[in-house]
Image (cartoon, rainbow, N blue to C red; front, side):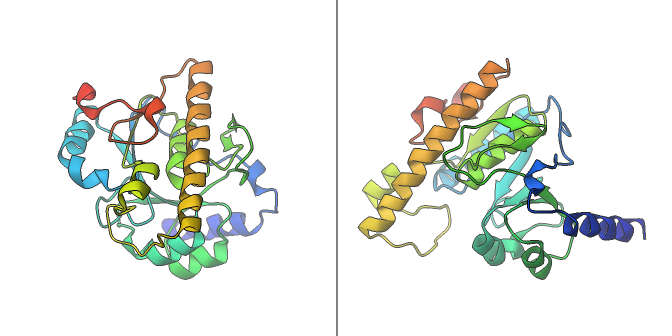
Length: 242
């Protein structure tokens, strides 16, 4: 009964939010202060490096965050969604032990229709051109993709060390014609779609470097992408941590 009342109170609070809900601090600020995190993207490098990723997770006792169709690969501590279509397509992959984080720009009605349990909101400003910043736990930029946004969310939660895997980038994938994710998903290979992915790469790189600057400016350790990636400025091979 206590859990049911918690759910009712949660939805009551959510439906009372106005259009400026990104001005409300999230409930998870500093929830895992000084803990280490693993951000799990969906790039094809996951399959080739999963044994070492498991060793890394065990060595550092990492809190895991994954997004979209990650549930068939790992049951993360936090399962995140910021894209409505992907939430509808992959909400069935959410594991019973995963806490769910939903980007505030997915409507509550959509979430309730496709997922019946408790979830928490990620407040962020959906602006690709805004400079990265965090104010009162609120991310003041889009971070462009859910993978980069998860890094920012881990920072809000108080992360000490952040490892990132499966954030491969798109340049090499486009050149080789390989799969975009560790799983098969229908994707167009025409020039306009390739331009779209390259634009994502541009913004991802922008925000990754801005997050790195934010962490260093606040005397915090920067994150490390530890599986092969096109974002070379933030890459450090996983073997260096094992």
